[in-house]
Image (cartoon, rainbow, N blue to C red; front, side, top):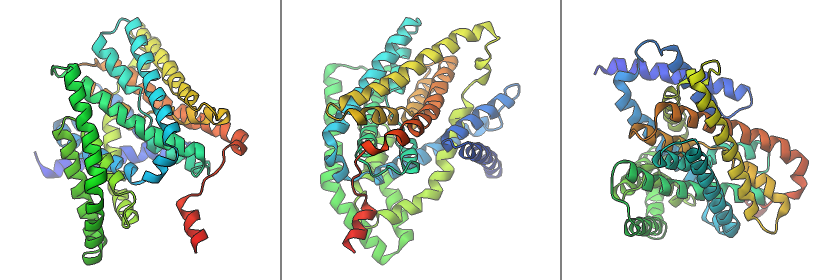
Length: 407
């Protein structure tokens, strides 16, 4: 493998991602949607030849996974423990209903279409998690990021990501032929809880002091390097106990979310995330077969019908999550709409199913299509309903407002 060739392939894939992301942003859509579409179009253009990235797929996959872990780390950095506590019960209810409903609906629809139970499990799991990044961006654009409803959405999205990752871990074990029993699931649950508690209670104060010391004695470069090493270490720790590495990445960010150097860490990670997380989404897009979308090919009709059915249950399942807010009827619709966009975890789940051979290529393309359309529908739905109902969403102070009042 020649390093020069790898660099050229990276250059080409990143330019493709930039072009797709640029177009999506100028169409007022999330950049991730453009990156996925750009990857899919690239794969379609070279479908009659050998993809130029195929020889380097393994190293590209590693780079993409590192970028994705950095993305989940940055998401964790934005979640404060006090925010979780303030809307905890409501967020927990939304997350549980927003996970159970789409999982069961996705599984049921898949079985009705005659798919195997394992494929149905992967499809159901792929529909559970909400994209925190996409939803947060839309809420920020609508200038309601500090509202109570927005806090419920963001915290619930994080929690259902964690639940979705737990479901993914169990289903992946089944797909790889590992024995799954009640005792194994109980052991995994105990290890997940112990891992979270150990990091948040024991490790968090220690790593915060270490980061502050490194920042004083080394500067921002040292802080960036140390935080990246910490991210890698907790990602390894999560993998060691049977979780996906992005669980460790998220908890690493969460443990530093109230650190004094949080803003420096966040700023230092942005360029890295922009490049390598985008690379991951472009690579995911290349695994989608756009030729399956041609309705004039009779063999494509079952896949298109399945995609439409899964899209309906994907949207309906998340809208149902708003019902968990019992005493706040006006917030139900915006919370449900805010939970619609799928993203990173859904893509990861489908990708694992494809890589382990559990998901056929056409079913993966159908699933990817559903993820892309929910990414589109959620922001559009929010932009439609928020201006008409904004007066119903009581604002709570953001960190910047609190700092201004203290001054």
